[in-house]
Amino acid sequence: MIAPNPIFDQIPNSWYLILSATLFILGVIGFLIKRNLVTVFMSIELMLNAVNLSFVTFAHQWHAVKGQIFVFFVMMVAAAEAAVGLAIIIAIYRARATLNVDQIDLMKL
Amino acid sequence: MWEITNLHQPTTKKPRVEKKRMHLVLFILFAGFCLAGAINLLLQTHPINSALSLIVVMSSLAVLYLLLGAEFLAAAQIIVYAGAVMVLFTFVVMLLNVGEEEKTHGSKIAKTLGFPAAVVILGVLATIALETQKALGSAPAAQVALGDSLTTTQDLSRVLFTDMLLPFEVTSVLILIAILGAVALARKEGHS
Image (cartoon, rainbow over all chains, first blue to last red; front, side, top):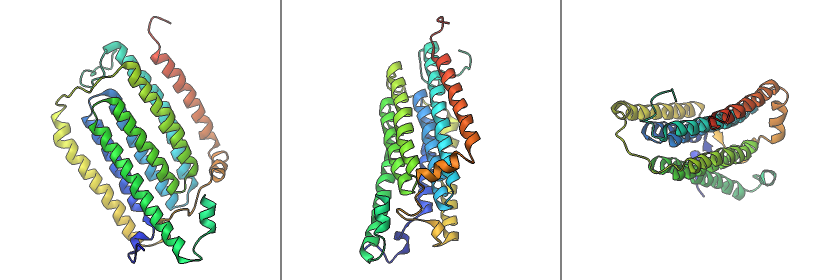
């Protein structure tokens, strides 16, 4: 038997939101400290996922189906963004032969 | 599985308690996987290891979506994110034969301002979440119980193909343009 404490009856929404915020901040930190272009891109995907989690939490809280549909759109746009972003990374690698972000400081190929 | 748990609801006390504990255990387990994967993504120096940790994060998030009653999104998360997008990532890592990350000092500003700012943002977000939780108190809207308010794929698609039909169709155009852009960008020069 877990609880006289009511917090164990159900999971509070805030736990999901705090998890989402933590994942987002880890994504931001990865974006700042990582020096490899591919890993920096992965950090961005992590941030997108963190935001999706808070969308789903709020959709559950207010019983709003549109919140989940928004997550669906975010997923589709993220998939398109990943395809284009990775194509850009391949183009950059062909031109520079490096993926170190410190050496990629010009838009011009 | 969901219907079954709903059918057997609280006529007796015991299954109810087990359900609560089940939810707590599942949440802690997969939230832990999420955080461990995200931290591992930061610690690993080889991109392929980071990509594998990101797959762990995305799969655990799919389980959390299922706990929140979003069954379609859980499946889409596995198929689209953990499947398609991460395969694309690992494919690019292998295609480019990316090696270990070179350690450079990075910028001073990122270290001195970035990390305190990140901690402050996390603190603010967590405080807001907890305060809102306190304001809502023990209202049903503030809690997540396992198996309540499941959004079925049917509910989701009904809204998607009536109210949100135009955005949905526009997204297909976006994906088409993205495919063309990706092919144009990744093509070897001199082949045109």
